[in-house]
Image (cartoon, rainbow, N blue to C red; front, side, top):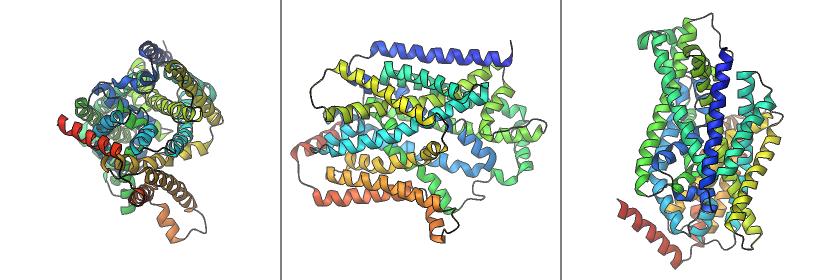
Length: 506
């Protein structure tokens, strides 16, 4: 058989496995809590790897290795910031959100938690947050479909549209039928695949390039500064890169995993697994890029056309075609894990946070679950239409979507969990200011390259928009809450109950 045939076989096995997991999860999904939150029954390993896989996407296997291959170790500051942010998220947010979301009327989405926690009778907080989630995640899902189309186009010569439809069809199928459980179980499998692939490639690669010493010499022969963490970086650039970690506190598709963990006691175990997975995976991605630099320096007759394909290229060079096919499947897994998580959160925002508020009549769980499935399909269709022509503006939006969610929701989650005087008006004002700041600041960054840009504009444009967005959201939410705070016995009781349950578990 040809190399391509082996790789196709590996991908077909992977895609069938994802559909089987979706069918298995479908059989275990009975009510709305099952569909949207897995019945709060996730074990620590599934919760940890599901959060990690839905977070990292193709950036871990393509974006980060490609950036380091071109720019060297100075590009790892984002990874450092993300690791710090992820750990703080697991340590501070995860246990409190797991308990508090259950105490506050068993909230199953982030908007419903904020509404119940803050007793927002106007419903504005839930509606606005639902709209923000729906809009940004529709474009996020679209960008994932673009990545899937490009993956099949570059790896197998299929048309971009056909590749996009294959990815969309499989992801929609298992997400639509299996809901949160299907997304979490497939994320777990995909997380394991990504983890093993990022260990295998640098482990074998280091022997091929002659060991640590010879590999380092080859990298220095290309450019000595590639092994320097600060060459070409400004203080603002490093701060902005590390500030990516702030985004974790407000990513709905990640923090919803905290709400779904089976017991509070398993949160600590999940944190250790999740952070361990993340650190080893990021080190593997970094090592893959460095080994790639050394390999192509030592083999000048072999060329690499796309730096972001360094992981794929090394997989095909170092392994049997069937194993190389599984490496390709790992890249596809990274893309699909994020799409599925974002589809489900978008569906929950559409049905749980918008539809049920607009149509106030009581409907059965069966109908709501089916509406959730319809929501998955609707968001996927809109996202596919946006991605059909491979519009670059969609991919550009992803660059600040992380900042948008981090700035709009991050401070709100932290204040709602740790400050009893936080109010619904403070949350609404902070959320709007945070999201608006990111959008306005991003337009400043766009103007940076204009001929008429001033030194001030250039400086502001170099600051990652999550920094001013997060700070202003936090400040506004705090100030407005101080002005609008009124004692509420129910809120005080729930806050105290959450604190008591947290202390009892320690």
